[in-house]
Each structure stands twice: as C-alpha cells, then as structure tokens.
Length: 466
Image (cartoon, rainbow, N blue to C red):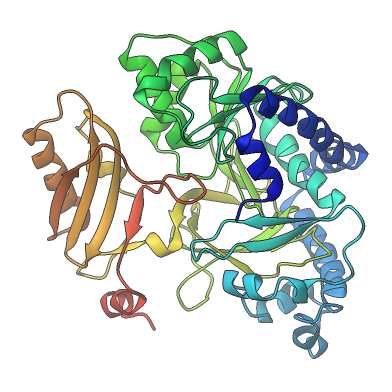
C-alpha cells in the first residue's frame, strides 16, 4: 500500500513533484554518502587484491562476529546455542536455510537489538504480495552504495559523482500522465530518474530529446527497459551522445542486449548483481567475468537437495550477508539461479569467485519431458531479427508458449524458425508462438524472460529429484 507521502506526491503538479524530489534527494544524499560511505569504499578497494586465503580468513572473522550478534536474536538463539562455532565456515554449513517466507513472517525475530535511531524499514516487493521488511541502519545504507561504488562504478571508470540517468522501478510519474516530462531530476546527486512505465512509442521521442540534452555519463537501469529505448533509437535512425558506461542490474543481460546497448551509447556494459537484502554482490570486471565480492557476502550455489553444485551446474543462490549485524540473514535463499564458472581464473588477476552467469529466477527453471533443466533460451531466437521482445512460458511438460512483440517483417518463416530452434533446444515439445503488443512486467517493473508454470510436483516427477 502506498504511503501518505507517495499519495501526496502522485496527486501533486509536476513542478511540485520535481521540488519534492530535489528536497528528498538532498536528504537522501546526506544519509547515504556520508563518512561511513567513504570509509567502506576505501576498505573494499584495499581488499580488492586479496588472495583467496585472505578472503577466506576475512569471511571467518566476519562470520564469527555475525554469529555473536545473531545469538542475541529470538530466531537464531536456539539454532546457535548448541552449535560449535569455533570453525565458522563449518558451523555455517550446519545451519538451516532462511527462506523468504520466514523473513516475511519473522523480520522482527531476526533483530539482534533495538533498532538504533535513524533506522529505516525498507519493504522489498514479493511475488506473494507480502513484502519483506529489511531494517536499514545508516551504516547499512552507506554499505549498500559503497560496495557497487568500489566494485562496479569505479571498475567502469566512473563514480557516484558522475552525471547519471536511471531507468528503474520507482514510480515517479502518474500512470495516466500523457505528456512529458516522464523524468525527475535530483540535482544534488546529478541523477535523473526516468519512468520505465511510460516507454511507449508515442513517448519515445521525448525521452531521446531529454537524454540528448541531459547527456549522462552513466546510463543505469533494467536491461529490458534500456533495450526498448535503444531499439527505438536504432530503428528510427536517431543518435545519442556517447556515455562512459552503461550499468545494468536486476535482469539477465543477453549477448544481443549487450551489443545493442553498447552500439547506442558507444561504451561498455557493466552488469551487476545484488539484492535489496544486502547479502551479496557480484559485478563484471574489465574482461566481462562476474566476480562475487566474498567480503560482502558468502555465496553458495546449491541443488534441490541443498548440496553444493559443482562448477558449471545450475543451482539456487544462497547468501549470507557479512555486514548486517542488526538483522542477520544467514544462508538466505534468494530464489535466483546461477552457476559457478568452471574456469575460476581471470586475466584481471582478482582472486574473487567467478559466476558463469546469473541465469534468472530459480522457480523459472523449465524441465523438459526427458528431465533436463533449462533456463536460458537465447539460442531459440538465433536467426530471427524481427522481434522487439519475447518471453518463453512453459505451460506443461511438453507445451511452451513464446510471447512475441513482433517488429516489422516478422513472418510465418520466423515462426517456423522459432519452433525449429525450440525443438533443437528442448526436444520433442509443442511450441506455440503468440503475437502480443505488450509483455507484462512484475510488480517491481522487472521483465522476466522465462516463466515456468509447472508445479513443484511436476518438476520432481520429471527430474526424479526428491
């Protein structure tokens, strides 16, 4: 439910909204970019060239501290009382997973102390409709910005002071607003926030005109939203001034998305992976490898039985945040799917664990009739260049729908190519191509490339897993 402030904001004239954004932005800037922010950035930069053994030792120290705090919480006290924590890594593996449902039901039971003054409760969106409550102290808010500053923005050659534009989930314009501006500017932070909910064909020229005038050094946002804008720019022969970096987050970045964004903004795409719960962080280095920051959170990738996955094998991401001592999240199941890279060496020389890729939502892993698990469907669209956007939905073990927003020239031949590619990718299944004008987003505005509608029982029946 929207807060009173949100309701007042949405009912206000645009000039009042802009004034409110400027005032709120100044307060928000002071809260996050404080001395703690700069200290944390320095600490993460100093550890960047640690060896694997040094990172392991750092994790052990942080885990020991975390366990000490967690033992004061109603939730963790009974779990830790009988546990030998002298070897923190061994002890960690003996603790149960923390589910999102438990976090939703027991947010206050996880607290290790009375929240200090200045703590803010941030509610993350949830697929169940019940948001999780994350307690952000001033320190944790600084941490939330400091880690991507040190391990993403600065790797890309920019920083928090660079002029930025963000295409994210925050609703900054009324849904029925028909005329620009569909953006609001925070002058203190040199940040323009563009609405992703108004990226319709009739509004695109106004976005392009604004971006050309604003000339951001950093373009940030959901890959699907940036792709929508970039496709329009190329299809209409338009141009934008080059940026210094494109920063993507929250959705899977395909090779085609990367190529398109880099062509439009004339710079490299630097993808990042994090969570509102502040329990992990991963980002691409200059060689495009996804490095997990082991000093931000301890990451596990586990199979359906909760056992560690071998490199190259897809599994569920489980994370233990190493810095939130007020509300510890230990072995927290994020619901994301990923795999460790088989080759754990990188030309950049950083001794940080490497993810092959962040695949998507764990519950959206599709299962073929012969029991194979599939999440990435990039190859299905090979040879078809007449699609604006597409979503793969598994309706039954042998039935897939591909929702397609067609571009000019999309034909029956393209339909046959998609169906043939699906046969090669997943085997003997029925594939129906459904032409649509829009693909729905999640409640937080994210695009999901794959949806699996199979029940857990159906998946177990196909894979044979318990």
